[in-house]
Image (cartoon, rainbow, N blue to C red):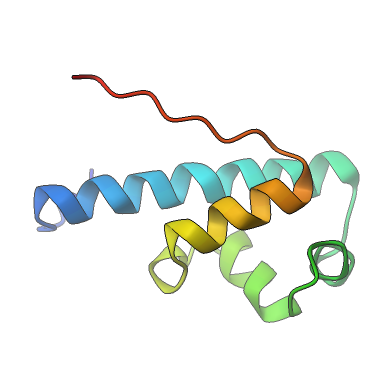
Length: 83
């Protein structure tokens, strides 16, 4: 998908991971029935960051940051290599 947009392979892989983690966070927000403001408060971040996640603007967020949010939300983050 990101390769088709012209991203180099390593950047495409990172963008895909960011999107997958953001999707998990969006599902968590929906499951918990949270507004963006409530989600931000629970994760101890500002609401505009939640908006970036909800709008899938993951290019502004690092993998490290997204993984940290998952931990705060109580979501398990695993990695599987297709080596």
